[in-house]
Image (cartoon, rainbow, N blue to C red; front, side, top):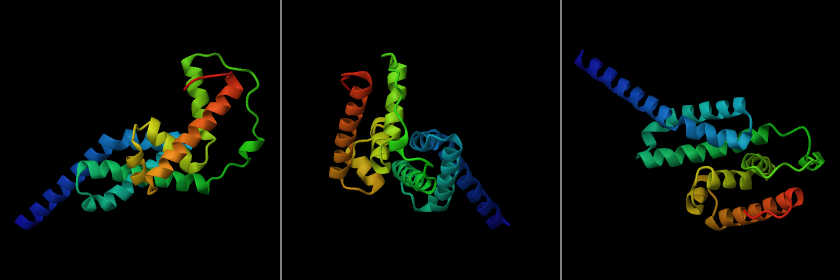
Length: 176
């Protein structure tokens, strides 16, 4: 009987630990997925899938920092996989940019940047989200996405150049 009570206690502790991890990291996981997918329902599905995978892998994770890095990596990969399965019905080249320039208010510029980042290819888009939303450095991004640091830096530089060009075509000269 004592063994049964101890087993139940261990199960309860494991569940409490898992529930605490979910509460602590659900905003970050959802935020990364939503920023990449721009679809709330899809981001919720990715987040649920990530936490189911976390539950299965919980015993292999060694520290709180390992859990955070693992969650970011799995979220990034699952978001990219989800995007690949649900390709858009039209090519981005066929979508015209809005003709009317927006005002220079920060909210509009932020919205324009969000939309422009959404036009980047999958891997550079995820690199930009992890760099500027999650404030990760190049080494952390490389580790999370399993790509070399040099590739991360190249994606950031090329993406910034492309975003500057698109913004200057749309709004005139802007320094970011």
